[in-house]
Amino acid sequence: MKNRLKGRGSQTKTKNPFLKYHYEVEDDIYCDVPIELNQRTTFMIDTPHKIMNKVESEDIPLSYSLNVYQGCEHGCVYCYARNTHEYWELSAGLDFEQKIFVRHNAPDLLRKTFEQKNWKPTPFMLSGNTDCYQPAERTFKLTRQILEICLAYKHPVSIITKNSLILRDIDILQDLAALRLVHVNISLTTLDDTLRQHLEPRTSTAEKRLKVIYQLSRQKIPVQVMVAPIIPGLNSYEIPAIIQKAADAGALGAEYTIVRLNGSIATIFTDWIRKTYPDLADKVLRQIAECHNGTLSDYRPGLRLKGSGKIAEMIQYIVRVAIDKYMKDRKMPEYDLTLFSVPSKTNVQLKLF
Image (cartoon, helix red, strand yellow):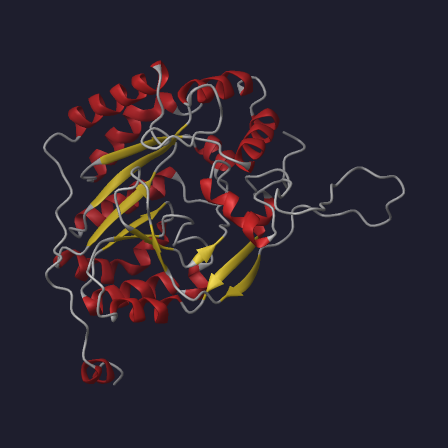
């Protein structure tokens, strides 16, 4: 525990498989200036040519996702999005948490997407890769602009976040909800704040997330809880309590995933749990592998998010029983796809005054 980097999830810079050369930090008695791993977060401008991503996976219910940030300061150890940082010649470990790309032109690209002649309204996930309400959003306000555009065009959107910053935009969410154009998914991994601080160090506490569910529900904004990821042997025993507390706060449903450690995430998570919970490490890693056909990684369509085997079946059963007990007869409302329209230039100009 003494060797852990405070405030960071990943405790290492992993090797990038796309790079021929890499450097490793070692103790060196001849080095006059130590290399500092735990650097401050830096932000870089990214200017993509398109912002809506086509999702071609039977595991994901929505057809598109939109990400305004690449990299995430939340620092969740298990985050599947870490591997995408390697395409930028960066590390999936600390670089993912410390070097954040900001897609400043995302709002303009979204307008252009909606105004394409062949575009048909379909709910998209905001974000789906990295959290759209991560700390950077306080400064850049890109997520708020995306929601304002969805409201102007009356386009449906689904949000997933674990940050209480979403309450800043409750005014827009209310308007979207009144038109049945928004679903909110609050990710809640654990009720144990000590575990949260180690597992996802820069996220909102469980208490704040439950308050988010409560506040959204009071304003008739449809919200459900994402019990994700479930890590066998670490937080799996909390499933019933999480669903019960989310139901008490007003959640209309619950979904779950079982953690999978693809690519460099396996190295990051293994390093983290051996440093943070050494007594549990072997048990947790073994049970994760039992859910994924004997490996930490899982690329099987239809199974990679829910797993297979006895442990995965037990988790599925516990989730189903908890939902039946605490959320029976609740469900998220259907989206209204009939309202979509492109605002006229005159209306847009009038709103500037």
